Image (tube, rainbow, N blue to C red; front, side, top):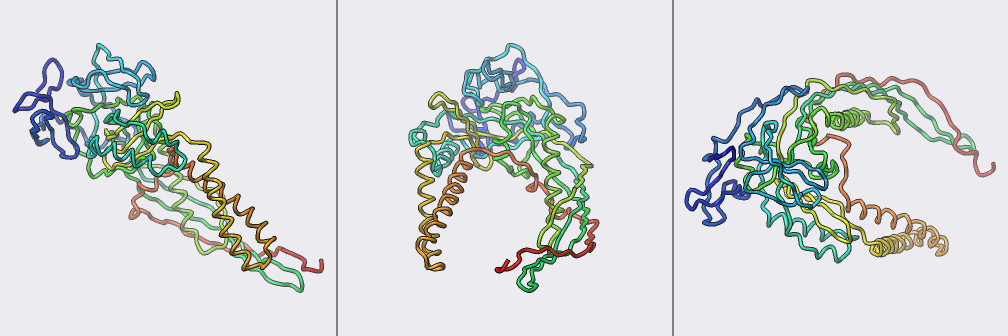
Length: 422
């Protein structure tokens, strides 16, 4: 029920507070173990048009009933939570939150994806995330992870059509001998590709405090699970209020879409020995925006004077975060990769060349390269990465190649070598 402007979800059997249990998809009482279907709280749903224009329309408002605004006095994050959440740690920096005395409305979401991974599963997933990180300090792996918070993060989801005109130089190459000289015949082609394709629900979070690399690394969500907004889903969790509107995050989404259009058109230029992109002009049309709340589990922990924050997709269980790196483990891992590279290449080259010294010299170079690649890969797995494309949101069946032209330009010859006698 609602009193004094607050949503107040009470157990009908014992009167204790109810919280949403994602693993059950029900409201649950932690005192008498009673559960209630979400349909019993349907009166809390608020209706909104399923789509808005690409240029954000005037936002509908929902009353702050059941919600109070809190501001982190350290990082400045603005959060919206139900009354029974009270003071808590900031999920972004781990510091105490200051609750404002006033209550403010926020834009009504088009929908929400409820949590489906519970806190215990989230804790186990973070431990597994630590387990396979080869450069992580052992002391860090043993840290407690019981300070974890469920957060609904605001996301803007973009639907649109991308159209592109790509121009390329393509080449067929053939090597041949002219006496002692080695030559290369190159046939040049001017290639044009024009096409269009549809993208659906390309995401961008609307929170300044949330790292884009974290949100990108946790993709994708299963959007088929989006349900109508119902405040009951937020019971027992924190909801982050967006502080970046759709027009603010749109340039980053546009860039991801444009890169995917360019890649899709480039992939249609096949059958050549080499291809150079001259230009590719992309336009974005027929766009629509949806505003949704998506579930995350967040953990902040301090180690050696630094704060490390991790995030977990509250629907799929995927985990990301930036981890500390042990320098001594870096050295050890580099040497291990290099040793493996040296042994394998030395054996192969010795059989091929039959010269131990030559094989050993080449193998040292190969070992250093293998060590650097291995260490680079291990370091890359220790940090979250920003995505620069939107291929996962491209509807393959929507792709139309409107123009395909390969025009022969001419043939040229280049001398590669003058032979052994030169």
